[in-house]
Length: 102
Image (cartoon, rainbow, N blue to C red; front, side, top):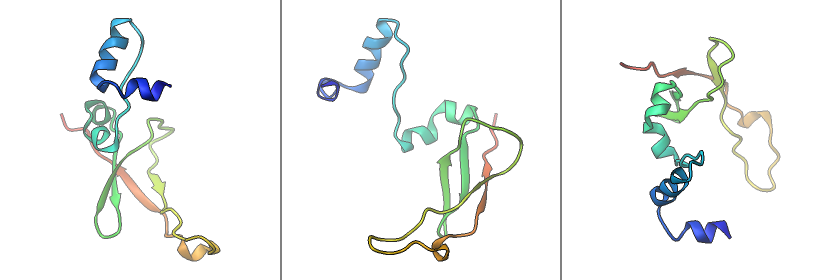
């Protein structure tokens, strides 16, 4: 019901209508938009690490418990019918937060 109605106009249109009614709202961004959003940069959420031969950028968690480095490991790569084993696990990597540039 909502999906069909929202599809009748643009995101900017619906945000303007909701804001005109003084409703708290914000757009849902895709990854491309989130990576360049001013709030992502201001809150230092942009992370970078080494992917498969090239740097990978992603959005980190807004929750920071300490100054410890963030660690991450690759998702399992197995198909239907295969049994996951430790052999598919890559070692954990350390990711670094982008420094906010002023």
